[in-house]
Length: 213
Image (cartoon, rainbow, N blue to C red; front, side, top):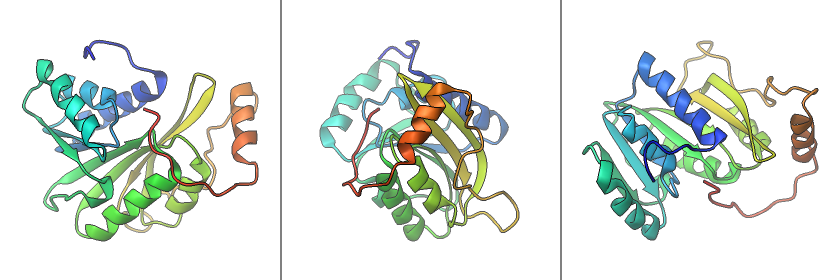
């Protein structure tokens, strides 16, 4: 991928959010978890937005492909890891931003619960953009010690996605908690109506699915 190439509305919205965040209070390390093709991480890397960008995917062949793909424009500020994102090790002396996009809510919950359990002393914030079941993720986040920093709705290819940026280990009353329903839905928008009707149907338990990046 050429760093100047365009990306879809969903990934571009996340990139714009990361760019804004890094201008105000930069994270030394950003983790692009379940990175798949690596388009988002490559954009972050090519814009020199952090001291270190870590690509993470549990599939070794994905990381092997990315290793070659990044060579033409590597700045030496990246690392590639083949592992379950829930098993990552975070330096407790630094602030971290973990991006989980393109995977389902159940998968995100599993990863985050492991990370938080394994790193009680590390400040880890998250940007979520689940591929499905936003409401399930919101149910989980609403009872966690996490504060809502930003949320956004992005529509791409007739699908709607919620982007949720949260601060981990938030002190009580410092930030609002994540609500069960995003307040940004526009009932006059047909795409929004169709999506809300879809997610409000009775849920059927399914095995977690990974990636649509």
